[in-house]
Image (cartoon, rainbow, N blue to C red; front, top):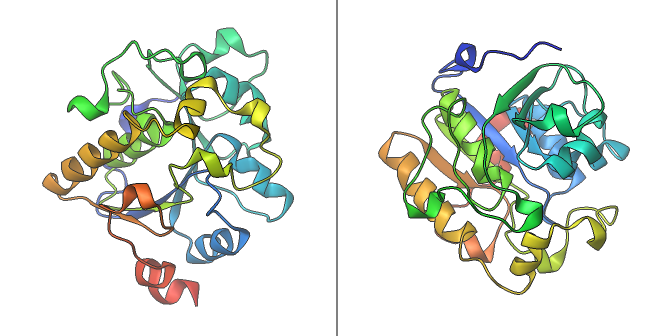
Length: 237
């Protein structure tokens, strides 16, 4: 197994748009079909691969900042997908993967341990290959910083509800797979994730990057909503 050099991706997609797809209940097959039709670059996370049971779709990139998610889901993704994984995964996992970019990360979400600097306190990495900060979700830990590093200037969030009390996009995500840290959010503890989204939204704006959401979230009302058609135009019609 050969680790890929992240530096080769720096600003590779300068000025382009991308979608960042979460695992929230607002994610639907219909939305994924429109993303597929648009051809826009997509980042997915963790158990999105469950969607493969309903639709044939090859995401461009996968992000995982938790060893448990890597062990459970990583092998289900196409070999062409770029894998942005928490460094040290190879010591925990007994299988090989292609197209792996290892990213340093100190937190252990599934153990409810946050022993690194938090995005909500004003930290945003300019080089994910050297350091990454905790946002209490892989979307913030890895996906958005990596997209920024790769040069994307418009990012669209899909299936990012920030409301774990409603579960996930699929019933195949059972409560037994929900990390202990997420159970805080079921009890309405959003003390890390929501302030982190606020900070990242402002940081991106200050650096010439636009952040939108396509699916609604009452917790992310400070991020402008756009429809798929507004985002991708005739590509989805």
